[in-house]
Length: 163
Image 1 (tube, rainbow, N blue to C red):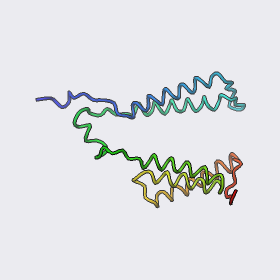
Image 2: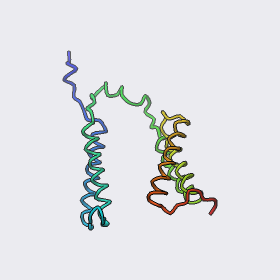
Image 3: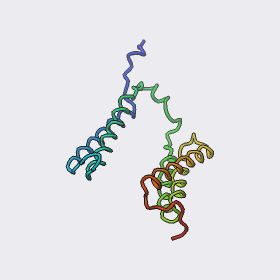
Image 4: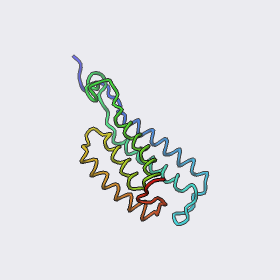
């Protein structure tokens, strides 16, 4: 009789995803060092990519550190989807939302573009209802106005009609 505690355990995808994020973030930070970083008050062209690279690497470390081992063999097959058919709903909604954002931003303005990307992308998650997607969209539209239109003064009108 085999002892269940002696079964080999493997790392789940979060561990490998975190490791990949560390590699990508560290590479970005390393590549940004070839540019002038500057200071916080006078940022150089390499400051932003360096900061983003470091943040990505930190997120990767946190993701890998919180990854749990999963049992290998038959027990691992019980975890996950019931079917072998991949679910493309999330990916297709994110791609469609991005395309709609581009066209809505070009022809209708910041608020319609934000509505398109957030609402359509939120519908990619099967656990979200239409009402939840609308609530998330309303909140993100407020955030977009405050951050991009008011604070950063991005040159994109809130509403624009036509070409």
